Amino acid sequence: MKTEIVYKKQSSIIAACLWMFIISLLLFWLPLIGPLIGGIVGGKKAGNVSRAFLASLLPAIILALMLILATGSFVLPPVAALLGGAVMIVYIVNEFALIAGAIVGGAMA
Image 1 (cartoon, rainbow, N blue to C red):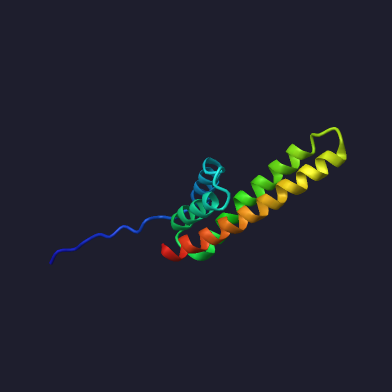
Image 2: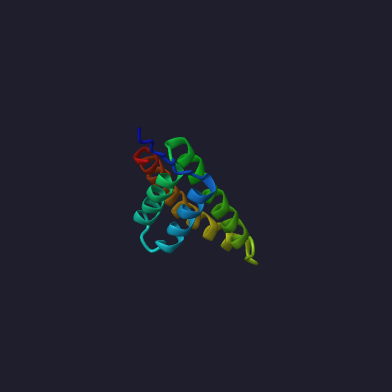
């Protein structure tokens, strides 16, 4: 009798988070498509939908903190508020694309 050993691929939320973050940064010039691709790749790396959703929130938190620090360094508060608001709107739209891609990628895994 021949026995086969099947190894299940280990999935990691941190690795999926890094894939999403790096691909989203590299494809920043594609406003909705870049985060969608990053979400799909990261979602497949996460292994299932719930882990993919969690992994998609971690880059969101990191990028939101980076935006707060970047816009808080301006001398004029009205300029910081306008710039921060405009960037946050673009960021929220891209984050929805990342979450949608993560859900699709997690379902494909």
